[in-house]
Image (cartoon, rainbow, N blue to C red):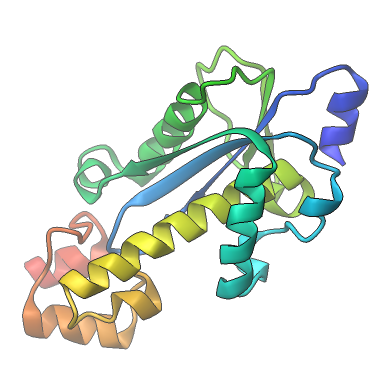
Amino acid sequence: MIEQTLFNAGIINIAGVDEAGRGPCAGPLVVAAVILKDPFSKELSQVKDSKELTEAKREQLFEIIIENCIDYNIVEITPDEIDQLGLHKCNIEGMRRAVMGLKTSAEYVLTDGYPIPGLTIPNLSVWKGDKVAISISAASILAKVYRDRIMIELDKKYPNYGLANHKGYITALHTDAIKKYGVLPIHRKSFANISAILK
């Protein structure tokens, strides 16, 4: 485990960083950073990539992670910002904001797949990091649960789009709703499927 190697080197405050919401065409991109008290604790033994967990299990682990972390920070990148800057740039900027917003200074940062250019803290991008580093897995759960909760609230505001079920990913139901009821402020207008409808 990557964290064990860092712990053995005397590096304790390790921030894991991951995002949720790159693929959807509606809603924010959410990025979480978390510094766990002890990545190897029994309490965190069920933490793994958020995509491999049920919604109920993610909700349960969300609270457990918060109880067993030194610090965490979750940031939202709006659809407007994504449209203006592009998804990848927003993803990198979101990771930077999440790390720099931690009240506890990280000694080392582990990210899922993408490095953070210009970050003064030593950092490592880990291929499939949410599967091999528990700090990244924990961040993936925080980001996913936080974003899902946003989409469930947005579903109450825009009830015709099925946002609580598909969380803003493009589905046949979502496409039909956009064609029938129109593009919303929460849609990413730079995404091909949305821009095609706007033409």
